[in-house]
Amino acid sequence: MACQADFEMNISIIIPTIDNRNEIIIRTLKYYENSSFEIIVVDSGEVNNVSLQNFKVSYLHLPKKNFFDKLEIGVKAATNKYVVICQDDDFILEDSLIFGSKFLDNNLDFSAVHGNYIFFEKILEKIFYELGYASNTRKSLDSEDLDLRLETFLNISPLLISALTYKEVLLQNIRFVKKYHFISLFELTTLIFISLNGKLKYIDKCWQMRDMKIHNKLSWENRKKPKNELIENLSSFLMTQKGIDFINDLNKEINIRSSSNKEFTNEFHNYAISIKKIESKMEPLKVFLIKYFPNLFKIFKKINLSIRYLKKLSSNKINKIYMPEKNDLKKIENLIFKY
Image (cartoon, rainbow, N blue to C red; front, side, top):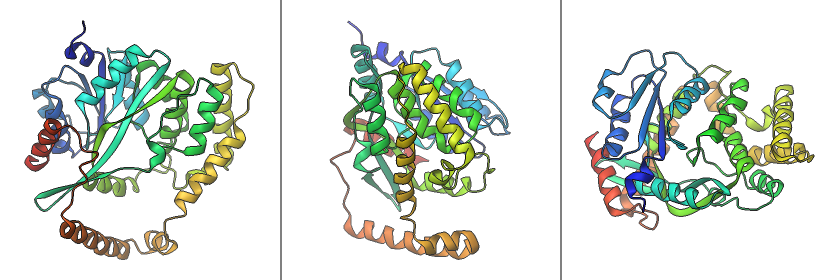
């Protein structure tokens, strides 16, 4: 009978990182240090992070490699059949990964597993948790019919990258999307390639915990990235010639892998419209300030953040319904307070 360590040894965790995030990634690595998972850190920063040599990890220093190249190198280096991408400011729970490995072993018609995403923030000396993303993310795509799986995905527009999936599935996805350079497309194609290879299982367990203070800071810094890596407006991009080429290539990929003649062009356009609705929720004033008065926007942002923190502190409530197991929570909290 397989023991827990056997299932851990089925899983490779790929952690992308960059310069000046040493304390953040050490915090994540310490969470996994007593596990048997294969940990692969892919670092595109200029400085070789020698401090990571103290951990049981495969450290790949890939200076100036773009997001897709470093991810592809990391996934190729994985020696296990299941892989998961964990951002360096996240924790993907050990117990949930083991559960996912067991599930995929016993359900060969499924190609990926994910669960609940918990966002947390440390405010003063207290940690506040909330359930991340909308309910559309907490779904299984488990129809026997591939076309129906793809239609469901494009209709509900779920958000996730850190699902546990097969190494070959993730490589298929990376090889396809990297020619377009845009990181923003990766989330879209990840779920499509998962659907092309099987079903997606949602489990009602804490899957990933994300540090929102660090994540939001990184999101702000990402605005300075080269235009070839980011898409300001996904729906607008899908209407451009390059976006149309992307949709056509994806249609071809779907038809090759599914032996289907169905065209998903209309579904992709509807997906773009749904994304447009989400993007339009950002108030016009905010968009205007970001574009023309970034310093003024930063002031407003700090004011809004202060109000939000005051509300949280005054309510003094923690959402315990979606909390991870007590031991995991204690371990993560200790790391958060330490670093």
